[in-house]
Length: 298
Ligand code: RP5
Image (cartoon, rainbow, N blue to C red; front, side, top):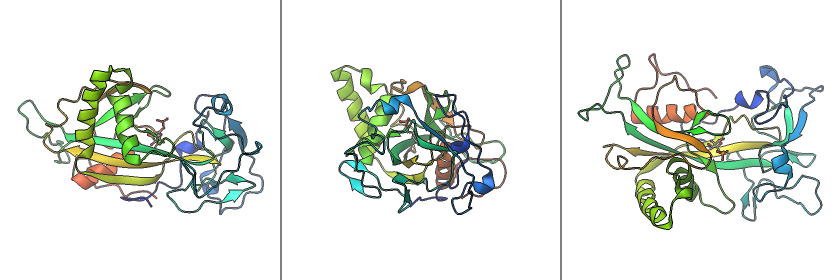
C-alpha cells in the first residue's frame, strides 16, 4: 500500500474534460458521487478508447470482448502485472473497476491496459545552493529549499517527474533508471560510446541510498472507470550536490525540456506529482509551504 500520507483517493484530475488528446467530454461526476458506494442509477459515462490504443500496439491490450483475450485480473498475467497496489479491485461485466471511483468515462482512453497501468517515478533531489555553495533557506519558512529534476511533458506541456510505464516483466528499479535516462539525459539518441558512459553515471546515481516516497493510485487525467495509473515514486537525494553536478541534463523521448526546479507548494505539476514532492520535502525537513504543514488529503 501507499507509504507517506497514503493513497490519493478519490481523484479530481481524473474528472476533467476534455479527455487528453481529444474533444471527448466526460459525463460530469459531482464530488459526492465519485465513490462507487454512492448509488447512482442514472450514471451514464461516455465510452472512449483512443485510436492509438485500438490500433493494437504492443503496449496495449485488445478490446475486452476480442476473441482469445482472457486477461487474468488481480493477478500477475504472464509478464503483465494486473495486480493493484490497493488490493483486489472489482471486475464488473468483465471490466475492471477503478478503485478511486467514477470518472465519467468508460473504456481505456489513452491507457493500454484494462485495470492498473503501472508506472515508476524517479524523484531526484539536491539542496538549492548559493554562489558560495551554502544551502539556501526560504525567507519565510526558514527551511532549506530542495530542488528536483523536472521534465516538461510534450503531450500536455505540464511539468512533471521524469517517470514512465513499467514494461512487461521489467523490474521497477530498471524502469526508474531507464525512464530517467530517456527523458532527462536523452539516452535514446546517444551513440553506443555515449550510452555506455551515461549508463555508468546512471548506475552510480540509482544504486545510491534511496527511499520509496509513494506507492499507489495516481490522479492522472487519463484515468477512466476501467483503466487507471498506479506508480511507485522513489527519491534519490544528493546531500552534497556533488554526485549530480556532472549529470548532462538533456531532454529526450516524451520530454520537451528538463531542468532543476525549486520545490514548494506553489508548483503546478502533472497528475499527483506535487503530492510526491510534498512527501519528499517532509521526509527531508525541507521547505514546502509558508504556513503550517498542510494535512495530507486522503
Ligand atoms: C503518471 O504518468 C505517472 O506518475 C508517470 O509519471 C506517468 C507515466 O506515463 P507516461 O509518462 O509514460 O505517459 O501517471
